Structures are given as C-alpha cells and as structure tokens.
Length: 283
Image 1 (cartoon, rainbow, N blue to C red):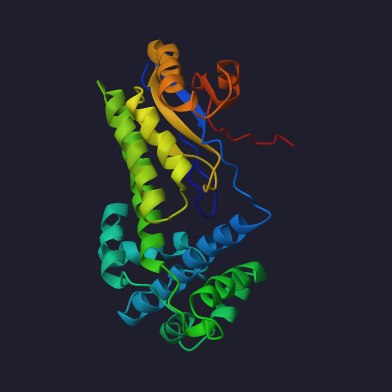
Image 2 (spheres, one colour; image 1 turned 90 degrees about the horizontal axis):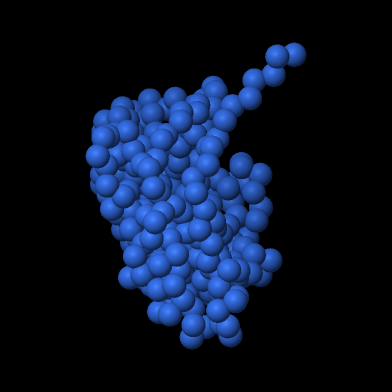
C-alpha cells in the first residue's frame, strides 16, 4: 500500500511458496497509558521536526517546496529533486543534511526561521507531542528544556528512508524468480535493527526473542507494532514451523513461562493471506 497523494495506491505482492509467519510474544507489554505514550509521542515529534528542519535546509539550497510540510513523506519530492528519486539516495542526502548529535528545541527553532518548537508541533494540532518533548528534555536538563539536546532527528529520518527502501527491496525480491526466503528474512532483520538502533523503539525482551527466534531457525525477525514490548514477526519455512516452535520453547520460553501448554498463547504460526484491497463504491 502506498499512501500517495491524491489517491492511495495498492499493488499485490506474491510471496514465495512455503512461507509461514510466526508471531512470538516478548512477554512484556508496553504500558501505552504510562511511560510508553511519552516515548511514542516523542518519536512522532522527532519525525515531524526532522521534516520541518529538512524543509528549511533544502529551501536554503534553492529546492522548491511542493506542498505544506508536516511529516517526512512530504519532503520526499524535495529530497528527490536534490539527491535522486530512490529512497537510498534520499537516505544519504538526509545523512549529509542532518547532524548525528541530538538537537535542542532552540536549535530546531533557529533552523526553522525562528519559529518556536511549540508552534511547529501545534501546527499539527498535537499538544501531546509538545508535552512529550518537554518531559524528555526536562529529564535531561531540569528547568531549561528548550536548550536540552534530546531530539534525535537524523536517526529517526534515516530509519524512515531506509525502511521505505526496504519495502521496495522486499517487493522486488518477491517478484524475482528463485528468490530465497533467506533474502527476504535478511530485509526483515535489517528492519528490526533499524527499529532498535535508529528509531530506538525496542527493549531487551524484544532483542532476546529476536535473537532466540533466529537461532531457532527463523530466516528473519522484526518487532511489530509500536515497540517497547509486544510481539515480533518471523519468516519461517512452512515445513519447519513445528520444529521452529519446539526449538524456541526449549531455548527461550521454557525458562520464562510455567508450562508448555502456554506456548500457544506466546507463539503461533500463520499462512500468508490476502493483503490490502481497495473497494470502490458503485453508488
């Protein structure tokens, strides 16, 4: 699914035969009504601010603004004009435009024409995003949150553009004859590494179950959902699904849950089904 403007686009992708998805719980739940909501909102705020900073930096280089910019997807045409149409080229362009160390709210405001961070985020009608930045920055520098360097803009943007490229790489691999499940699995695992290292939404328990799943025979594994707990999804050969569950029980879950009967609540394998579709009303 491509959420493109002016119309969403859907293109079917056929997975190789004998593919199975295994969903494995990390045995940790992200407390979305507590600390996790601040972390989640912080990532959204960082991505929105990265988009704003990239917009102003590209404008300063003479690149034309195509539309109102509020999310990273909106700067794709600008980055494409400056660096090339592939997400891989945009990824490298972002690496050169944004510095790797954390930004402060004051630095972001200065790069965005003096517009305060609160106004940059409130333009998206997202007061919770402002609160998340204030809480995170205050924890780093009490009483002076605007000057606290806590916004990892480069890392969040690099995750976005590398993840976009992996989607197209996965689609391309599925369309090639003779594609190995290991090739698709490598993309899935690379996605998880980006979630952990660049987007920083993993946790020790997710890392442990990803490592255990791959050691048990999964060809690739990635956290799914918002992160900081919950489940991972793995690629497994369908004929190896039962053996995969057995190995994962002995290597990981046996020391963490009381009895093997509970494994069905922690690990389940499913066959791929129909993907997204577009239904057009005839009315």
